[in-house]
Length: 271
Image (cartoon, rainbow, N blue to C red):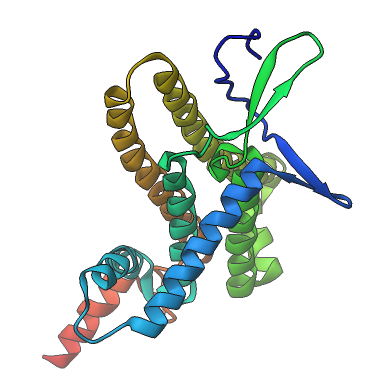
């Protein structure tokens, strides 16, 4: 908190509660997550109703990240890529919009002024970037974790998945299995903390620049936040895709050959 009469800039590591609906406490980061979801729903509604064979500029702008990322998943995901491309794109678009909402006017700067009993004041913003809340990033990481584990169980079965965790040779299982389990669980921390740390650091930087210098300098950092928000969304989505690929062995075809080898074999048979 800041002393009374000083700056109200105060970025907390935890989300601030706004009001309660029965047992549910609505926090400002939850508002940011809902706004990001509404933006995506509005874009999807517009695209479904207004899409045309000859795309407009707005339609091309919406299609570009979808086609670009689906191309990455298609070239990297092997023959099962269609099963998880929608999931990867949903993660990317949700995180991207949630990150980019942080640069809108009023996000993190318009809210209620709370006066504490010691005379200090604190600004509680109405809207805060969702990714600056560890609950949001951890929730996405849990969804990603459940997804790639369910893919592994679906393809290999419980026995095959446990065999992967056990490792080879079998007599090394008492040593290797705990290491593999910790490695699997560490992905939760890796996914959630990387996104949370970068977005929270950007929020602190923007708040500090807005409080210390004129608008021209913060505008530069807002441009950088656009880039960082895109990169963090892409990293989270591609890491989730990589974990799915590693879990199911997507590059292995049903015949047991790697995808490139199968394609060369098919080309050779054609000649």
